[in-house]
Length: 259
Ligand code: ADP
Image 1 (cartoon, rainbow, N blue to C red):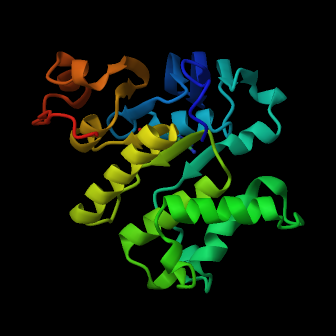
Image 2: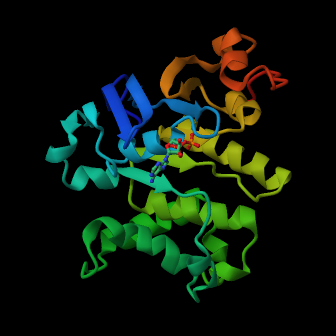
Image 3: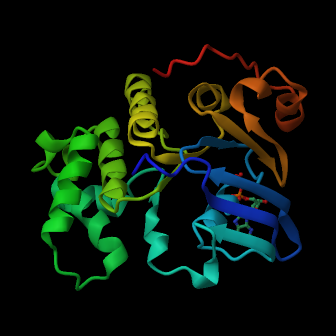
């Protein structure tokens, strides 16, 4: 989360990546890179390979062929750097939501994740947790049980949990599922702030192109292959979206409301 000296540095790079489940070709010749400071929306139809691509970027799935470089390193050479990619899942699992854990404990667990279960919680760790709570503006919720929060508050907790690990990249998977519109807007505002003020690189996977295209800077349209990748504002009202979604989407672009 350091702004200086990161401009243009390639954080994630895929080169000619192919991926199949058996005979089912899910990704074909996918190449793109995400630079430090980018805010990228990955969109595409259901079954288009978004989740698979996300797992590959996180290093959880190995491509059938092609190369994945994370912070300039091959997956096989990655060690602790893996922790520099923060993953925010769609929602808390039901187990987590019912677990009698406080906001503080959940956020702190983002600190221990990369360090193993027997990691001793240091002053550094505590400071990182406090920063994460402050950035996500959930300090006053710290003693609340996770099960007592609203959907929007839980989302912030999930982000704070990732931030506690001091990631360079935040990867979000359909992050607003089941959250009301007002909370969604606050959430997008918060993400824009993280990107803009804290220089955090964000990759946002969604099928909600209307919202996403108005928030992110670049759009990666994926449907097995990379249909297109470029500035969001150049890509809307183009044939890509018709091709991608079969012309079923009434897509409007609103002026960017970043500050
Ligand atoms: P999206 O996230 O864009 O909906 P996915 O990456 O989830 O797309 O899925 C792409 C394709 O891969 C689909 O055809 C899906 O059926 C298939 N697929 C996804 N996960 C698995 C799996 N674990 N085993 C077999 N096929 C899978």
